[in-house]
Every structure is written in C-alpha cells, then in structure tokens.
Length: 417
Image (cartoon, rainbow, N blue to C red; front, top):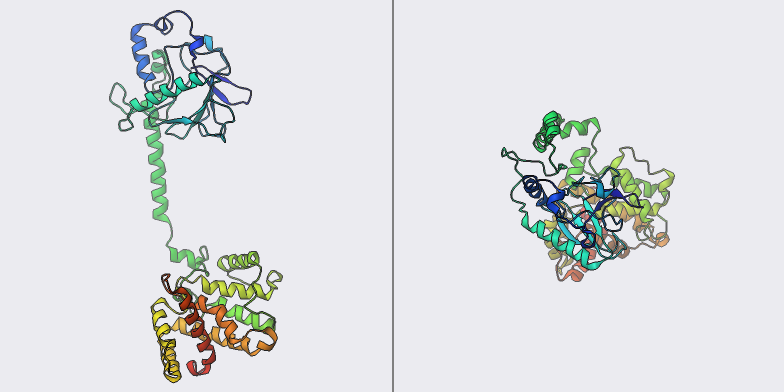
C-alpha cells in the first residue's frame, strides 16, 4: 500500500485495483522467495494485497478519519516508486462494515475499525471492486484469532499497537536494537508499571474522607441526603435549610397569593439547589431569590428528594390504617402515638414544618391556602409507599387526609409547641 494525501488533507492508503495490475510476476517485484515468505507472514496480520500492485489512481484509496487517535502519515512518494507498504493496519480483532451516511456521503464506502480504536474509510467508485476488498478484509480478519498474541522468533510477545515495518532491513535493526516490536512492548509495559506504582502511592497517601470534610475540601450535599445523616452532620434535629426557608417565607409575608401552590421558576430553583449543595454560606435575601415561590419550591423539592420521606416507609401502612379508624377519638390518639414514636429528627422536623403550615393556613383569606389545599400539596411529598402499588390513587386520598388531620390536630399531637 502506498501513502499520500487527498484534497481534504486526510491521510490516505493506496489500495490495489484489478484494472491497474501490470504484467510480470509479483514475486519479481518483492525479492527472493525467502523474502517473499517472510513478507506473507506479515500480510496475514495486515490490511494489504501483495499479489497486486498499488494503484496510482487517486480515487481508489482508504481515508483515515480526521480527529482519531492514530492518524497515518506517509512520505510524499509516487506509488510506483514504493516496493513495500509504508504502513500496515493490524486486523486482529478488527471489524469491517459498510460506512453509514453520517460518516461519508459517498457511495461504496467501507468502515474499518481496529482494536486500538482507529477507523479507516475505504472507498471506490466501482461497487464490485469495493465488494472484493470487503470480502478480502473480512476473510483476513476471520483467519486471525484474537485469543493468541503475536510472537516473534524468540517467543516474545509483540505489541499489537506498534507500527510494523515490512521488508528486509536487518542492518538498521542491528544499529538500533531498541526499535523492534519487543523493545516497544517492554517499554510500554515499563511505562504502565510506573503509572500503576504512582497511582498506588497516591491512593495510599490520600487523606481520609473525614479529614477532607473537616478541612472543607468536600461538602456533602443537602438535597437527596437522608434526614438522619443530614441532621447528624449539622449537629441538630432539624435541617438548617428547612429552618432558613421557613424563616424567609414568614418574613416576606404569609399573605402572598398561592403560597406553596404556585410553582416558582424551575431554573432558578435548580440554581438555588446547586448553591445549597456547594456553598456553606447561603443568603436567601440575595436578589436572585427574591421570588418567594422560588423559596417555597426549593423547600418542597428538598422534602420530595429525601431518600426516605418525612413519614418513614415503615410507618406508611400504620398511618393508612390509623386514618381509616372510624372513631375520631381513637383515630386522633393512634395518629398522635405514631407521630411520637417517629425518630427524633423526623418528629422534630415535622413539628417545625407543620407549625409553619398552620401559620400559612391562618392567612387563608389572603393567600387562598386552606387546610385542604395545603394537604393536597404536601400529602404525596411527605408520605409515600416504598414501592409503587396498584391502588396508588386510593393511597393518595389517604395521604392527603393524614396531612390534613395532623394540621387540624396540631395542638393535640404536639402539645408542647
């Protein structure tokens, strides 16, 4: 194969065509029979057809895709002046297929992918010729087994990714013994070993996670964190972000229409979420968060993204059973006992949140947020089953009723508030 460049600047591989074969024996063009035997051994692992000469027509070529890791480069020589290929392509583990339209707009284009990630486009105007090439490449690939590496005469393993040099050039090898594939493989293995040792030392020297947290290099996220874990990290029983949101909403006014019902700008809410997760110093009085619906939207998002809701999964069926009790006194007592039995962080956070929601309901004439409206908004957020069930619609009714009951019986459930 001969090398050159086409008009697009892509490196090309010259491919033989049946029409360009001159008279004469291919054995005469490539040296003695002994040389030819060694030459064929390389041919079985490379993409070339030595029985035919290289074509001088510029359109019969294989183009290397631009931007790939291993672009091909060749000296600017006329194909007729070359007796051996300037470059070979390792076919062991390769794959050949027809190129899709997004890779080439031309017809009759083959796409050759090697095991090292390189890709080559092979094109000819004649469909029969390209079909012949495709069959020859596919046959060569099928003959090569990917289970056995390439061995040299001494039994050493060669480098699959090395660029092989064909031809009889023993004098140069004697002058530069490190240029062979075995030396390249040893050098590559040595470099890989050095990198592994450096990585191993780096991992051994890395500081513990707790140290990085104490120094402030790593800050655990707030959104999507378990409530118990978040409170332990903050050394409290109610997340600081929840308290900060509640204080801001109450400071700006509880008489705002559609409080917690109207959604804020989703993009701004996501920006606030990112700020909370990556910045310890959150200022909700910043002008970026001037819309109170952004604050309420972020607070609802926090509870919605808890891995386990405020009403834990293990309590879901218990609360559903309690809300179905017909007797009102027994129902209230059962729900109060369930709330009191919740983990401390869940109970205290529920107490703070529902106290705030009761204040919102006190302004229902201005904000049009009744008990039923608040229960519809927070029911599915605070209480949900661990797995989706068939009677999900019926559960949603009970979820809203449970939240509504806690709001109506807040003073009875939390007498010390």
